[in-house]
Image (cartoon, rainbow, N blue to C red; front, side, top):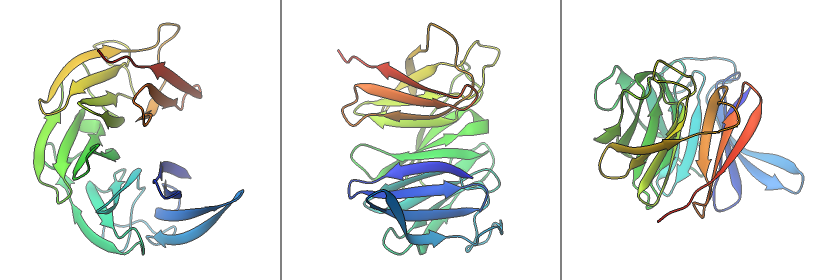
Length: 225
C-alpha cells in the first residue's frame, strides 16, 4: 500500500509502502519504473535497524534519504541515496523536543540542512537538524493534529487531517525562524474531508493537498506581498 512519494531533481522517485513495510527508490524508464533499491524487510515490520513499520513519509536531500518511520516507530531514519543502506536514525516516543507521536511526513528546508517533521498526534511541526537536534516547533491551540507540512522561502505550511474543537481543518501558515502561526486559509465551497498530504510547487505559487476521504486533490493559489 504506497503511502509517501518524493521526486528528486535527478528524476528518481522514492516511495514508502505501509503494507509491505519498505522504502524504495525507482528510476523512471519511459512508462515503466525500474527498482533501484528497496530498504526494509518486506512484510516483516519491526523496530530494529533492518526493518521499518508502516513508514509514512520520505524526502531526499544532499545528505541522503530521510524516512518518517511513523505509524509504529517514532523515528526518522536516514538512508544512503545511492544504495539504500542505513546511515543514522533518531527519535523516541513522547511529546518533548525531537520526540514523536506518529511522525507522518518529513520535508527539507529550502536551503537544505534542516528537516521539518509533521508530528501528527502531537499536533505540531518540528524543525530539526539532519542529526536530530531540535531547533523549534510550530504548535497552537488552533489544531490538535498535523498530518503534513512543506516549506517555501520564509513560510512553513501545515495541514491537520481531522477537524477538532477549533473548527474545520485549514491550512496554517507559520513564519520560518519564529515558531509562530501567522494566518490560515481553507476551501470555501466545502471543508476538507481528511487532508493527508500538502506540497508547495517549486515556484511557491500553488499549494496542492491530497484529501483521502473524498477523494480530492485541492489546489490553492498563493500570493506573496
